[in-house]
Amino acid sequence: NMLIGCLPRIASTGDFYASSGIEVIVQSLFVILNTRPESRVWQPEFGCRLKEYIWDLMDSDTIQNLSSEISNAIKTWEPRIKLNKVDVEPISDIAGNKINILIDFTYEERDYKQTFNIKANSDMMEMSVYDLIAVPRG
Image (tube, rainbow, N blue to C red; front, side):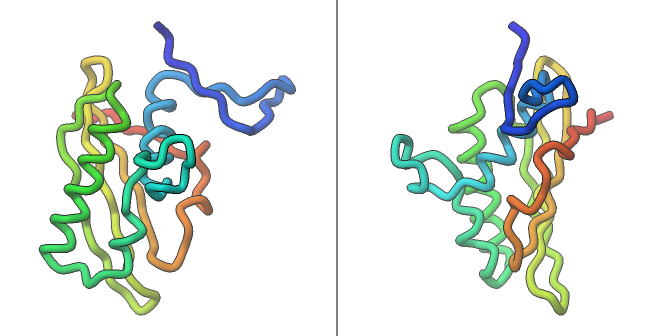
C-alpha cells in the first residue's frame, strides 16, 4: 500500500527520483492546480481553471469562485485525501496580482496544510515540484 510517485528527474543513484507518501500527494495537488482543463487530450476534464482567475479583480466574488474551483478540482482528482478547507489569500502589489492558496487536508488520518504561492505574471512550472513540502498541522 506504499504510495510511490516517479518524476522525470534523475536521482544520485542514476534511477528516476522516486517520491513517496505525503510528497506524492503534494505533487499531485501541484499538478492539478497547474493543469488547464482541456490541455490533456485523453482526459480533457482534468485540472483546474486557476489561470483563468489570476488576472481578475480579486474581490470577494472572485475569491469565492476561485476557492470553489480549486476545491472541486481537488475533490474530483485527488480521492486519496479528505479536503478540509481551501483558503485563497490575494496579495496585490506593483508587479500584479499574487495569491496564496492554502490547502488544508487529511491524509492517512493525519492533518496537513500546503501553501502554493502564485503570481499572475509567472508560470507555476517555474516552481520546483521537488521543493514542495507538506507541513503537518497541529
